[in-house]
Image (cartoon, rainbow, N blue to C red; front, side, top):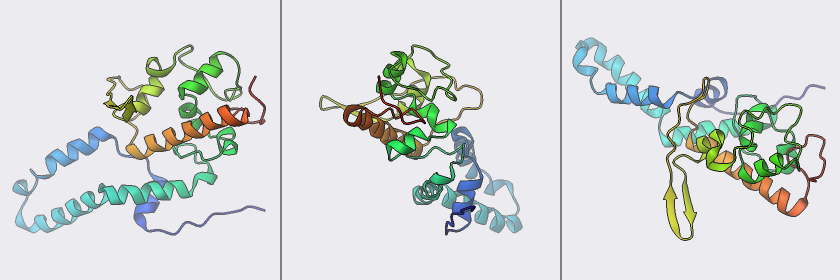
Length: 207
């Protein structure tokens, strides 16, 4: 029997599910030019422009972004390949989508186990494009951690990594980074306490 999940919401939640995030450079360009447009249009068009401006600001408010991310979380079990979501259990990490496999495998502790051949590392599906790279040396790790505040020995540290994005990549938004960081913690706990391999779809053990 085919099962369907019903998600209640409005057009904002629907947009979050159907369309990818706007690139940060595009958003900055729009924001920097919004103020210039009224002086360039006739009075009859200003009402239309004002409506469009208000809609843009609504769509990019923190409250609206939170609603959109909540809508994405609600469809985790649909396993949309393009969605970055929070892995909450070891079962979810073992059955992660290809997109999530990439970000889960950027966790330094998991990556070290992978290089030591002590975990499966989604062997049938994950492709390591930077063999041997861990932590700051690893491109995917830097994409997650750039701009993230870290507390180290009572010092507050926030690093920004200047990388040229690979083709098809975009900057991760704060909600996606939080989802990945929380997922890393689930995998760390699995490794430290359960000894079950969080990267093995067949639910094997760590070696």
